[in-house]
Amino acid sequence: MKRILTIQDISCFGKCSLTVALPLLSAMGIETVILPTAVLSTHTLFKGFTCKDLSDQLKPITDHWKQEGITFDAICTGYLGTEEEIDTVIDIIRTFRNENTLVFVDPAMGDNGKLYPVFDVHYAKKNADLCAVADIADPNITEGSYLTGLPYRETYTEDYVKEMLSALAALGTKMPILTGVSLSEGKTGAMGYDTVKKEYFFYQNEKIPAAYHGTGDIFSSVLAGAFVLGIDRTEALKIAADYTADTIAETVKDPADPWYGVNFEATIPQLVDSLKQFSK
Ligand code: PXL
Image (cartoon, rainbow, N blue to C red):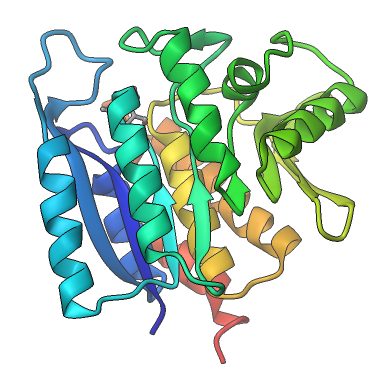
């Protein structure tokens, strides 16, 4: 069984970061080891959330794993929190990485042209150091713009997406993947660049006119899981994008309108089905 380490916060209420990565990766048949970087009462889009930083625990926990000889097929990072924490996570990646480890970075820090209110441009720039050690990094266009210094655009051409992918590759990421990319009216999806094969790849599906928190985390978890399972990059994009779209469609039907997070639990059977053709 493949084993992933996922490093991000645990927001007790709110369906994001570890509370989606753990169930989704487990459902995908991957042993999931968690390293919580902070514990929050809710994610940061709620007012008055509490936050206990766990940075000082990261080193003792990972030192113990090292002593035990624990290894990972992949190391994934999501929402972190401080610049110092990013440095610690880079150290952890260096300690546990070998030639077969997939390092997957989701530089979660903003959306719709803006950073989340808790972050500033220094934090955004520090994320570029993390992307530099990544095999795969999957920012959205907002994050890509903060990482590369290219202007954020609401409407754009394929050339703009390719320019941003090149700028992300120049940071050191082997396979940057931009998310939330719309290459034609009514569509959305992702486009990536494989710096080894020098090839672009993309997948688009129907855009559902609804926005919920946590969809980026869901997309990243499933995408990272699909790569770890050895699924081809375009198929991996399709699995992650279709699962995210199906989950948004399911959530739209919920009269409770849970803006704080999607009903990903309801669509786990679809995710599992979509993987059946790849099981060996
Ligand atoms: O979904 C990204 C995310 C993860 N964790 C926390 C957040 C957010 C986005 O706002 O606040 C704590």
